[in-house]
Image (cartoon, rainbow, N blue to C red; front, side, top):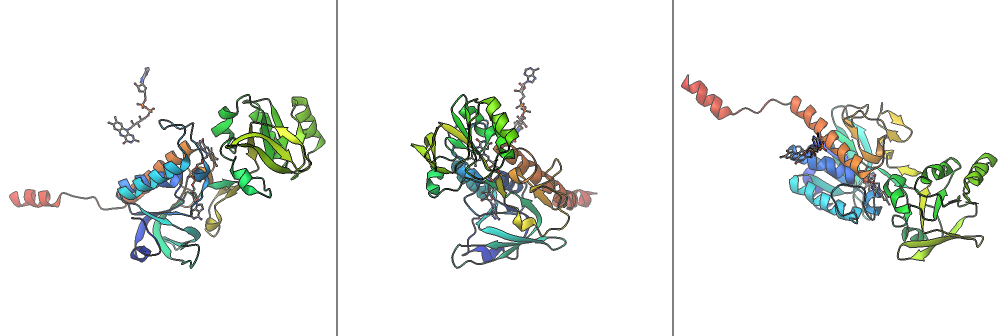
Length: 335
Ligand code: FAD
Ligand code: FAD
């Protein structure tokens, strides 16, 4: 059922089998599996997540490569609700482990917000990350190109940059190292720091040895039309020609609500899991970009399958088996 501030009261006494924080690729996959195992689950989604910014999905099996993330999300929400999952637009602010269940506090509504608390035996952290973009005066100019010809993921879109003139936008010296991986796809790389870091002599020499120009002035704007880049104008008036680019400025991790949970093992900002996506907390699972590993739709979707299946196994093994009572009664009576 789709929940909102109008009807969520009906679920405040429910002890869900699992609450899923984040209705992106991994979270919706988990919800579809959990619901089809007959388990009660609630997906909570704040909106404007990473997969919504994905303008096409060219490396996933069996779908039209021009399918945008928003279409997959819309379809996935319908599927999950159709199989019996609950879905609530809202922002998970905090999670408390109350010993045998989690209490999940959600902000619902941007204005006149309410803060209901939902309860579940298991928690699935599927809240992902979001890419840091270069900040310029007119951010709409960045959004017009990011996800189209100005990419954020080399594994996803390196192919689409093949032998093109490309910019690499990096915010630290170590992020510039992506140039030496991007050169698998194209050698025509210009490196831009957007004025965010100083570049040491060793890196400057390495870039020069590869023939990759370095521009240290801040970006003024992206040039082009209809989401197709033609270059980048810097604040010092320089124009760098490029038909594509890669932003490699790191990510923000959507994990604040987990920071109060004792004993969780982290690798930096990523959660560590076993091969069924269970974290070091036996009732807490993590999927997709938020956990250690490769940030891809195919991985997040498979992670959702694994987590949901392990939760089902745990719950099923602790339940009394269903018996065909009438048959037992009949056989016993016949004796
Ligand atoms: P997401 O799909 O990001 O889902 C996490 C969800 O959690 C989000 O919807 C977010 O709104 C929500 N959320 C976060 N915090 C909270 C909170 N506190 N409360 C409630 N909800 C919350 N991958 C590919 O495989 N192929 C591609 O071609 C590809 N192209 C991409 C292009 C772009 C521009 C971008 C940005 C990404 C691309 N990716 C691609 C990567 C892909 O989007 C991610 O790997 C994938 O979405 C990860 O799934 P996830 O479920 O872990 O996270
Ligand atoms: P496959 O998709 O089986 O691919 C292996 C291929 O290798 C086959 O095409 C085979 O012909 C070929 N091959 C084998 N040996 C050789 C050889 N020596 N030389 C050349 N080729 C060879 N999964 C779900 O997630 N959801 C479902 O609803 C679902 N329903 C299913 C319903 C049915 C009727 C069946 C049979 C399976 C279903 N599955 C479902 C399971 C799903 O099909 C498998 O998990 C999935 O296909 C496994 O992918 P795979 O690449 O490992 O193997």
